[in-house]
Length: 446
Image 1 (tube, helix red, strand yellow):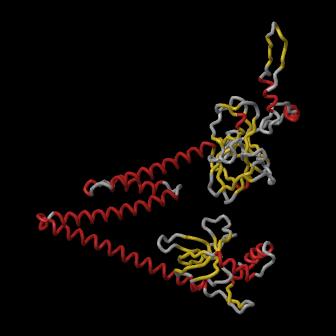
Image 2 (tube, one colour; image 1 turned 60 degrees about the vertical axis):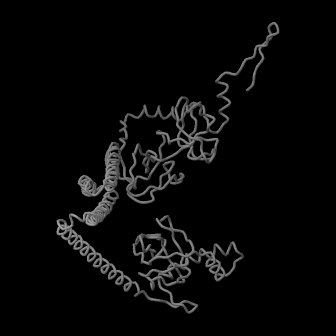
């Protein structure tokens, strides 16, 4: 800070400090701060507007739903603008305006922004038109500007301590192509849907909590009528939230099974400890046990039928897939059409590796891949969904949980021959194209 000496009176020196205006004038050199200035284009547009007597219909904001997967959210309404994130099918957003072929939408709820710490004092912005950026970097795009006196709640960015991480300002707008947004109602609809989502989540969580509390009680004190009623309400009345309805079905089945087991345990304990009442209770207990055994037998029979049906379907699928023609390659090996389909991809991976490794041979490449491979175990199932860019022709299933582990493909191992079987595979990682599970190239099988 520069000081100016005015004059000297009787040995006393008077010093003039710079005014606040001078201090803020120095701040304009910082790339994160801009003084408010004149805007000729704005004046011209006002003049033109006054000449145009055609009434302008104001845009009415509404709730929009994303109609495709991987829909790009951009910073500006043009195809050259940076992509901020990709939206999924079914996501909701508030549409605030339109610019040619794009809708202006509110930022996602979890969006974060960054402001230079120099211009924030005690959670209050110091200065006008202070830039808010998408990342803690002066080269990052500006998404909004804040004026003096605006309150912000932020934390020091772990990426760069010179910046504050703050919630995305309400004035920020991002852009989505109109072709991928469907209007489903006015702007209040989104709040209504989110409120209903909160309701179903609260009901699901509270009902589960109550069920766990009840199941901790002794068997005669357990009261599950309200639990069953709530779960059935979730299943039947919230079809617009399929994830929560499915979870409610799973929890209801689990609680019913646990209740039966606890009832059996209670009856067994009661029979063991109440010797003096044995003669009176024997008939009742036998009837109850017989009923439970019949129920268990029915469940076992049903499970066996379902297991047999799944095995038959799997066998039919394997038989159908085994009809694929096999072709003999240049090394005398028989490979399937599915294996041939992945050869261009593997060749591209090899070429990239070779360009960085003195153009060593393909055999050396796969030898090195084998040394880096890991072992995974599971049941091989064909991945028959007709979708683009899928990361494999097969899925590896966990035997215990029956859930997918990974996507698989190979140009060296005929995975179709082992479909439906539990095997140990030696694999090396490959791109999964943003699918839900990791993708692997199978280089060997045990």
